[in-house]
Length: 106
Image (cartoon, rainbow, N blue to C red):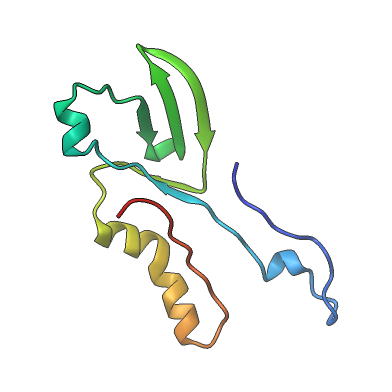
């Protein structure tokens, strides 16, 4: 699972794990036009219910990866925002230090 916490104590005696969390969420994209017209095969399978992304070639599962959240190619921007970012944005507006790092194709 791709998440990280720290268990060191801070200066005020609080467990840092209580105040610091990193979550990794994946959104699998659909094939683009070039991939579709080039007869490329999809090798990534997203299983949102299991928070799993599997890599398969010709029905042979080569590897699977688990995350804190997985969204498939049919997931809308709105759904991802509501499920992943909205609480973080609300906390930031309340004065908490928060970060959302998004990486990949847009």
